Image 1 (tube, one colour):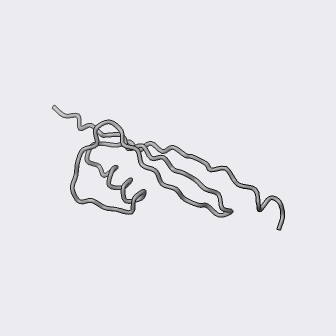
Image 2: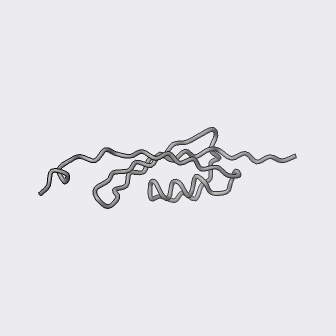
Image 3: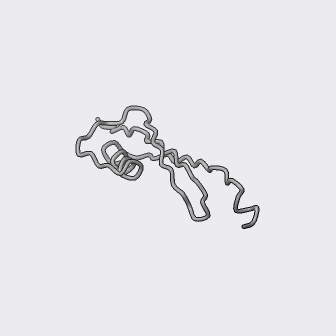
Length: 77
């Protein structure tokens, strides 16, 4: 075994911002990906909600995705 295999690889954090119209399915898509859940009820996101998803890439590289769900606004007259 080489010394490089024993070294701890630092975690990488990526931030993703999801934008779109109100009611377009942003929260449903994010919840499905990050929590493996799908909720049929709908509550409009007010402000910003944050979700985390941890994944391991080949080579034992840990990545944390911080997904920001920005509330959409329906502009109408």
